[in-house]
Length: 178
Image (cartoon, rainbow, N blue to C red; front, side, top):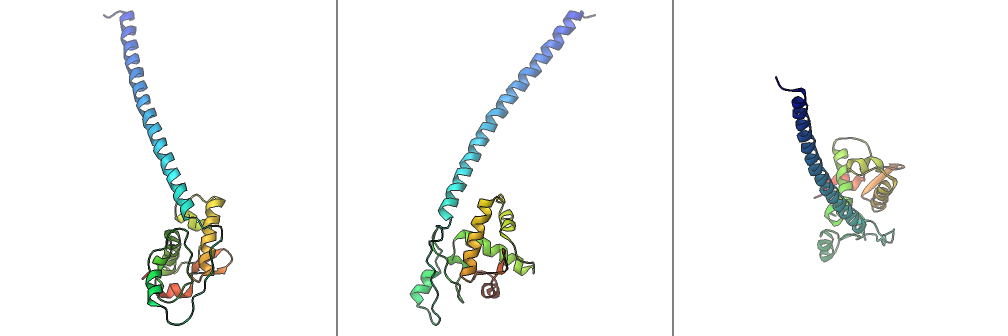
């Protein structure tokens, strides 16, 4: 029969091995956590930088109206090229492709086009923010509202109720980007 002291030593040794194993696992998890936090911070910085590049430039965009009638083909082919960040939103006209807009504006139009196709109602900017996976904080919502209002002013969207946006009649009739 083993002695009581011998049994205690065996249990102590097993407990010490378990503690050492858990400490090693905790150290590994702590290192993994630090690496994940670093990666998360890098992505957050990248998202903020992209947001700063794509953000509207405080309403300094010139409001140009499209002249009715035939368009110069050189101008039209240039307009069909994808817009650069911070470029102006052109006034919607028949045959103007969504690709003339920056990606953020195209996302808004695409979300509202999906709702239009499904015969769902208009969206407010807080709902758009949540659809895009953004936090519905005032800064994000107001940035979307600024873009939506600019699209309304240029004829791409309609705002039949204050703060509720849907595709305008012309872009809705096109059935989306061509």
